Length: 212
Image (cartoon, rainbow, N blue to C red; front, side):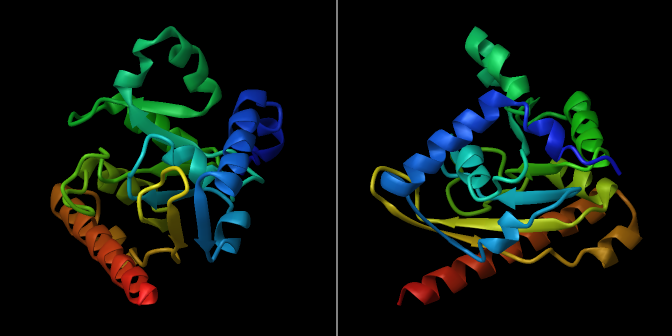
């Protein structure tokens, strides 16, 4: 399988933005990453799952994974500005229509994984859910079922902001072989969505227990 890490080194814009956020996480955004080595040693193809808190989540998660360049899903509305139309491809952003079946986005994600890359997905689909993983997008579950690659959950505990203390927990790959064996259908996708919810509830409970 082709290794894209060397090719990605030529992407100056991605490297610049990641470097800028590395400075921010050191002096302004107070991030502490637990099991950081799981991101530092990450290889593709795989799917990184993450709860969605702020617009900068992709850049913040990319900081520890500095040996490669993440691909990530983001809402299509961001492409309204000409600046984002120029920057999005260089930032490896895959645009997706929120709340709709976007076949072009699904194909782009599948190709990303087939090419051996790491794909960052926010299964909540939006930053504005009433609670953690209140709803998991079935499209994310269908993609994972088709790809059959490792799925690694990343949980951001606390909302990133100026001088806020935020804990980031990197989990181990989810065990999904039983669901892969059931095939790709809406019933199995619903089961995987429920499993993603359960995984994040457990990570949240562990984080809250560690605070006490």
